[in-house]
Amino acid sequence: MSNQYLVIHTPGAFGNFIAHLIDCHRSNKLLPSPFVASGASHNRQRSTKNLDMVIPGAWENFNTILNGKKVVGCVWKQDYFTYILHAYYSRTNMGQFGKCGLEYAEKNFYNFVIEHRATERMKQNITDLKDLFRLCVDEKNPQVPRHVLRMFFWFAILKNADNIVSLTNNKIKNLKGIQLLDIEDIINYAKLKSFLQKELLVDLDFSDLHAEFLKKNRSLNEYMRATAIVDAVKNNQFVDTQGLSSVSEARILYELEKFYFDVPFFNIVDFFKNTKDIIEYVKFFPNFMKQPNKIYNQYYEMFPTPAEKT
Image 1: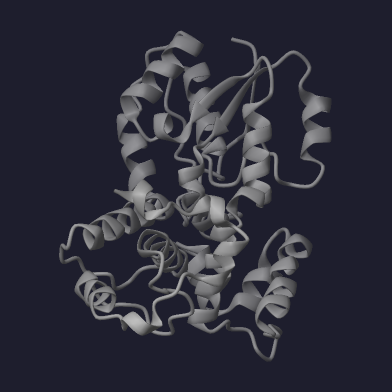
Image 2: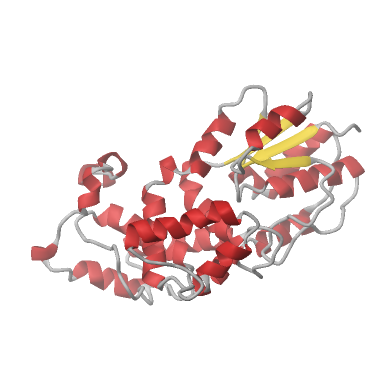
């Protein structure tokens, strides 16, 4: 079988994993596990090429190496943006940040940027932190305070439609003549197996590899847990909230502020320990202090009215 596939994707959209599985099907056997410490599938032979289209110059490279190859685009629905945001920091490079790049960044943001393979691009984070919070991150001041980092990601979530990963994801979706593969189909073993079998005409059992892929995907597990916590608050259920990443905390505060609308959740220093604390925070929030976040005036289309929420 000729090498006819090219996989394109944004960060966190499983492009390396799909390219690896294509190589497995072309070889009609499971190849050595591609997972690095963070769970990303970056440790592979790369017979099937994949391109992270957010990397500068990727689109020019895409046009150069296309050459009749069949293109698979790994894409995602906008609801998955916070997963992608977590993965952008957590599942990055070749595992030099250990099991989770985001956890590393929470402890030493400066070193995270300096040790990143795309240091020059990642330095924009340091510039943004200074512009948004008047915070200077450098060798002498390497750690971003937790609540500041949380608000940094909160703002990224607010601006998610304008983020380069969202714009790139939409650009991939709009390409003509390519095969799209959604994140939801990739995490579903039966659907992914059916897709690869149909495309490559090989019936390969990779269930154990797929199970390992899901188990190691901390970003996806965090996304699912944050979703469950938001639902628990809305349904008045008790759930522990400790041990979350700053991205998950930011998402929970963002989603709850959208839902309750006139109860502010921004810039909270110490995050809630459980959903009971959140429920009581809303229940007893002073009536005379209720007021929609003023930033909603700029982004009002994103926030449902009370009638739309019921």
